[in-house]
Length: 427
Ligand code: LLP
Image (cartoon, rainbow, N blue to C red):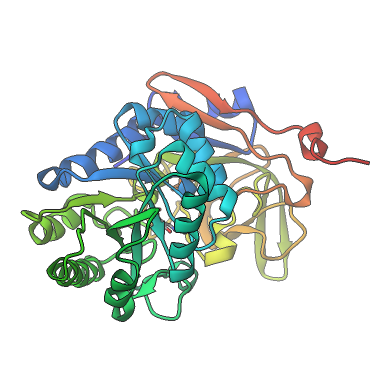
C-alpha cells in the first residue's frame, strides 16, 4: 500500500499534487511519502510482533538522513554496510545498539569506527574477517561482538546480480563449514561471536526460499547450541519484494510473517530483520519531464530529463518501473498501477534519458498515453535503490529529494549544483 494516488485527474503524493512539487523544485526530483514509509515500518513490526524482532532498516536502499531520522524516531535500527552508511545512521540519530554492520570488505578504519560507535554487532563474512576484527578490537583495547553470515545455499529466485544466498557468491561462510568456523573461533580474546546472519537476496517474491533458509538456520543453531556455543540472535536479512508491475505482484510482509513466525516462536534467541526495499520502495517516485519526442526506425522515443544516472535499475537489472503521466489525458486516469493497463489513444514508446549511452532508458516498449514536451511523468516504486544508486555520470547534478507529509512537502536534499560537481577537485 502507498499514498501515491490519482484523484481529480492528477497524481497526488498524500495531499500534495505531483505537479505542484515539480513546479516548486523542478525535475528530475525524487519524492517520498512519509506516511507510506511509516506504514511499511509499522507493518513489518506488527506482523512479526509475536517474536518481537529488532528491525534494522537497510540504509543502502535509501539513506537520506531525514528519512532515517523518521525511522529512528519510530524505533527502527539500521543495517549498514560501510563507514559512510554508519556515519549516516549516527547522524540520523540512530541508536548504536540497534546498528548492525555487514559487508564482505570492511577496512580497519571502518571496523575501528564501528567499535568506537558501540554498534550492536558486526555481520562477519569470512574467517579472515573474524581474525581481523578480533585483532583490530585487541589493538583498541576493546571488545567487539559479531554474528557469522552463513551462506545457506538457498536460491532466492531473483536477478543474478542480487542473488546472495547460493554457493559461489562472495557472501558468507558456506553452511557446511559453519560449525567448524564456530569451533575454530570459540575462544577469541577480543571478539565474541554470538549470532548467526543470513541474507538470501533481493527482491524475493516467494516465501519458500525464506522458509528453507530459516529451517536451515534454526537447525544449525540447534547444533551450535548443542556444542555449547551461546547463540543469542538470528538475523534474517532483508529482501522482501514490492509491487513494481501490478498490485499483488509481491506478497505483503504479513504473509511472510505468517509463514515464518511459527518457525521462530519460542526460540531462546532474538530475531533481527533488515528490510530496505519493502519499507521505502513504494514510498518514493521519480518525477521527470518530457523534453522531446523522436522517431528512430519504427521506434518512438520519449526523451525525458531523468536518465540512468538518476535511476540505474532498468538498465542494470532489466528492472520494470511503472511510468505514467502525472496528469493523464482523458480515459487514462488510473486507479491502480498495472502493467497490463492499455492506455486510451496510446502509443508504445521507449522512455529514455539524455545520457550518451543506448542503455540509458527508464522504460522500453511501453504502452503510454501520448505525451508532449513539458508533460510530467512519474516513475513509480523508485524509493529503494533509486537515489541511493544515482551518480553524476555525464556531469549531471543529482536530483533533489523531497518528503511529503500530509498537505505539505519539504526538500530533504537540495538539487546539486555545478559547483558541487567540482567541489572536491583540485587544479
Ligand atoms: N541485508 C543485507 C545484508 C543486504 O545485502 C541487503 C541488500 C539488505 C539487507 C536489504 O535488502 P532489501 O530488503 O532492500 O531487499 N540494488 C539492487 C538491490 C541490491 C540489494 C543489496 N543488498 C536493486 O536495485 O534491486
